[in-house]
Amino acid sequence: MEPEPTDLAALIGEHDDGVSLLSVLERIQAHYRYLPQEAMILVSERLGLPLSQVYSVATFYHAFSLKPRGEHLISVCQGTACHVRGSARVLEAVVKTLGIHPGETTPDNKFSLQTVNCLGACALGPVVVIDGQHYGLMSPARVGAVLAKYRDGRAGSDTP
Ligand code: FES
Image (cartoon, rainbow, N blue to C red; front, top):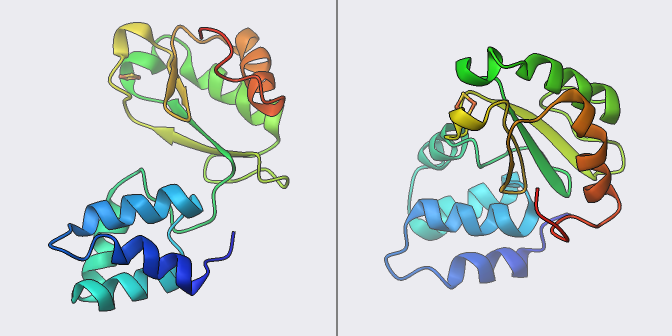
């Protein structure tokens, strides 16, 4: 989705009364699924902050992306607790199913894949989060069925 200047102005403009940089970036990320360069420049101008500060915040948080993301963001935990329970094999199954590696997006823009170091649910490892929905005790065998729900638009129709 290419940013329209009017969309950007509206997204930022609603927040120009003492708004925090973080909340403006969150709003833009939610709308475009990434932070377009034009948006970063406009945010810098509108909030009166150095562009370097805007980029610094944008690159610090995992939730933000400087590259367009797919419709669904898949985070596969590779932290220690998940690792000892087989998260590498879960990641391998996701890579094989989607044909992309961490940091990449499927050609149909349906899925983006990333690895993270902990999702805060270590006891349920291996953990995968898709669009904020946690899938605990993941196994390579479950990957296909879980991803199919998102590909077919059935996600959220039942419990994980
Ligand atoms: S290490 Fe995976 S959720 Fe904490």
